[in-house]
Length: 157
Image 1 (cartoon, rainbow, N blue to C red):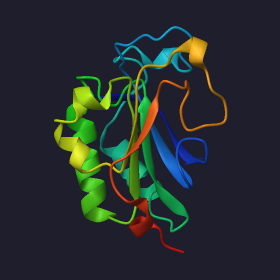
Image 2: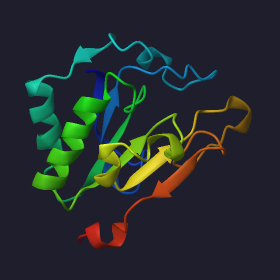
Image 3: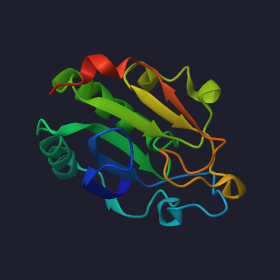
Image 4: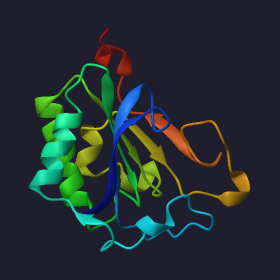
């Protein structure tokens, strides 16, 4: 799997302060996409052991609520195996951190995937430029924020 960047702190990609992994690879090619440079699965950098170690280091502080997987599309076929492995590792090693995944696929299309049982929030649906929405945790009003788990139990002060 390739990735474009790791954002150490974001408050725009889910609830609380988050680390964001921007993966490469997307077959939706939504008109007006915010991240068209992420569509090519070979763009960016190889997600290697060094990148994974950095990701887990960034997740350590108590003020980090969790991680968001975005891109590209974390559920793109060439990303799925690595993203599934990562979410499983995060839930094992850092169970207090919540996991958000953004995808252009609908929940109904991906609900059977193994990683669904490990993530807390799925933001689904392709970006639709004519339904653009600013100031929410999604890009267009057709997208859904689906809480798969109760996040209240994950919060710590």
